[in-house]
Image (cartoon, rainbow, N blue to C red):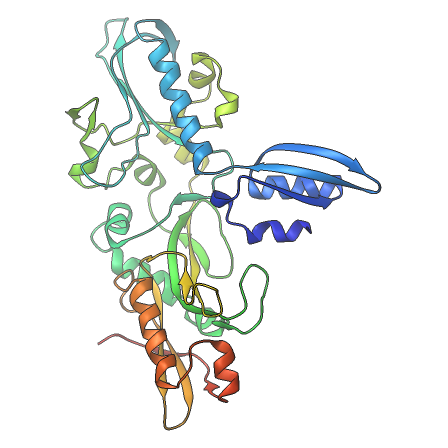
Amino acid sequence: MPLGSIHAHPIKRVKANYFQATASEAEAGCQKIGCLQIMKNVCQNTQKYKLTYMSGKSYASTEKKVLDLFLRNKGKEFEFAGRRFRIGGKIGKPRPAQGECKTDCYVELEELTGNPSEALKISIKQPNADFTGNKTSAETAENELGEDWSNIILHHTFMLKEIFLERPIMYKYKKGRIEGGSMTLGWKFEFMNKKSGYLSGKIDIDAAIHYKGENLPESKRNSKVEGKLIENSGVANRMLVCSAEELSTLSDITNKIVSIEEYAEQNPDLFFACKALNCRTLHEDPFKYDGDRPLAVQVAWKANAQTNSLQPFVVFNRPLVKNGKEMRQRLINALNELGCSNTSDLDEKSVRVLNPKRAEWK
């Protein structure tokens, strides 16, 4: 399997894979996809590699490792940031009433030098993580951007309107990772720590507030730890960037964690990226798509039976209000009006697919 085709597999769904490549290609590929392990066998002029991918499970194992190390050392003293503490009280993952908060590991500490006690509220990131917030919905957008979130997203996406209108939104044949027969339903909105693709740019929000979660609703800021509601337990004050394999002792954690302010100072720029949500009309499971995600920009497909044409409208003015499921049904309805069920039918019935136009929801 060529190196480039690795990216055809969603990392979260693939545990291991084989491909053939040179050593330099393999190393570059591993850095790109976040490989945890390379096992290689020499095979003539090339090498066969087995990759074990970073995944959601890897993130969970890091989180579990951090909690386990603090629990194992409960009652013990340690030095951190020039002060001495004893680990005590509640240790756990804060649980909001709904959704997620920013703190992954909450640890109550007893200050041994006479100062007020405090808690470590650690946000954990994998070393290769590009997303700072994904699966963006209206709720999460408001948490990150404040009450004017809708206008902020509209402002950033509309600046790229010409690029949106020029993007291919129907693929009769396979192109890269995109299956043949795919048709675009719209674009998701993701928060990133770097620019990602053509539909991406810098977003003007305070990095420290973003990483702490200070704009989260009260129900997420005040989360439960070991069943007890603790004020601001969901607002992080420390950042830990590592994988589970890097952690063996408590000092491995304390040597790596930094304040959110320091992390934000080192990583001041935040970005957004709009990622296409495609519907696979030729898939064995017809019209399969990757989840009913809220769309920052939608594609409304509309049929005209009299002219035997299909017109896609690109809509910006209702970010994250319309979801993939609704836009998929609009596409299905439009194809049905023309007696079609996939991109092959469009060819057979000589349907004209027109260039995208901008429109607005009334």
